[in-house]
Length: 315
Ligand code: FES
Ligand SMILES: [Fe+2]
Image (cartoon, rainbow, N blue to C red):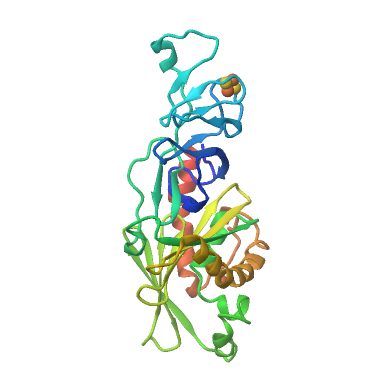
């Protein structure tokens, strides 16, 4: 299950896009259905009815909050338990053996999060800047035709802006780079991932960014102005890139997300052009050459081999 990124917590959709009606969702190579129950809590199942495999996302959410399959009308509650099998008078024991496959989910930091497995061993790890009321965050998202590991590497790489973003955020460092300026990066281990401090030239001022396993980078543009970027695998060839920021006190999430889009889309389009041109999974990149400023991606590749590839291979 979830072979592209097994056994990890990840955000998947902005909360403002999760309503009561069943909708299909792809994550890490699996197809899921998400809806909200009678208490407005999100529910996620594999999008496969245990009866004959029909997509549950074609079904109806009933008034009691359960989901009814559109093929033969079997009904499932928020935990996936079968409540009813039309035309068949099953006793409780027989019915207890029937269940939709429930996927652990949470509402956190503006997003619906899921665990890419059925038994979550722990709660997701969020930085301090994503704590608090989950409705007070703004999001923006794009879909890239790329493997998620290439997207993660893009967001932990700080020598590409002068070239990939030459006309925008890289404008000021381009001349410095072309005149032979030097750069360096310090990588520090952190319980949730790593802290990267990037220096251009003198080591008096460093730009800090953090990587949280498996797929988040937090860029420190100043206190209260941190940008969180997630690279969410949809399949082995598609990635949802989602930015998350704390909302100003009186801002409305949807209007604010539209404004964030105007800022983020140009920069992310510049990244997307490059990342979509790269070959897929970094596991296939054994002949690629690394230099000192690639320390963060080298570290990520090690983590990926030990925590994703080895788990996918033993599943
Ligand atoms: S396939 Fe869902 S009820 Fe038959
Ligand atoms: Fe970039």
